[in-house]
Image: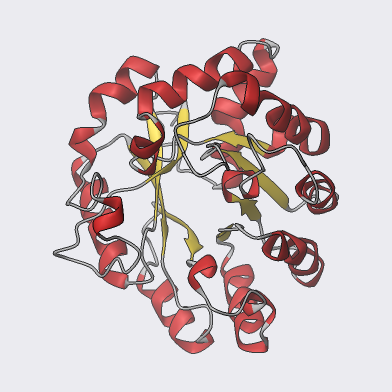
Amino acid sequence: MIDTHQHIWDPKRAAYEWLGPDLAEIDRPIYFDELRHELRDAGVDFTVQVQSADDPDDTALMIESASMHPEVAGIVGYAPIDRPEECAATIEAWAGDSLMVGVRTLIHNQADPDWLLRPDVDEGLSVLEGYGLAFDVVSVLPRHLEHVPVIAERHPDLRLVIDHLSKPPIGLADREPWWSLIAAAAEHPNVHAKISGLYSATGDPAAWTTELVEPFVDRAVEVFGFDRLMYGGDWPISILAGGYTRVWNGLRPIFERFAPHEREQVLGRTAASFYRLSPARLGLG
């Protein structure tokens, strides 16, 4: 079992501009050891650690963590895709490290909602495509999700994964435009999605239930199929939504409806394939 969306951070070692007093519960150093027992209780064998800041020091922190924790099977690091030459140099510096499996940047913190479509960013995405790295899309606004098919068409060999199913309107009366936009994104075979971060959209991230989340997971299954979906616990952001165990226990009844081979895909096989995780790291060879 692989959790494809797990963070660590330390504000003393990297710049996390989005953290602050309004997030006091998680505005502190957070490391893997704090999560380990909950992962074991949930049956999670491995995680993919994902960047939390557009700062190379955040990536260095994850690399350090992975060196101490064999449970970390992959790292999605930061590379400046808006500066293609620096992006290529960053990726070159990762050469030979099989744990470096993808890149993410916090596009939702950009003032321009069309940032992903800029020519310099597009060139940076071509760099990722050329190196065979995956790209995590932090799609929060409908506009972000509209861009996914455009990027998928421009870069057919770039593996894209939509983090948190692009934050569906859980708890709200209107499912559009998410309902239609997620289907449009899924039309492209190089686009995948994470069943992660599915919290209430009503303002209280903890005001969600399995029943509220279920229709959106079902929609994702309908449009992506099981072989392009993967589970993510979104810890420690999930602390704000009830904690890792609550999130896992809330999703588990949905996963248990799946046939065994379908559940296997979502809880591990899709992740291993999409991120091209090292079989040796997974204990498979």
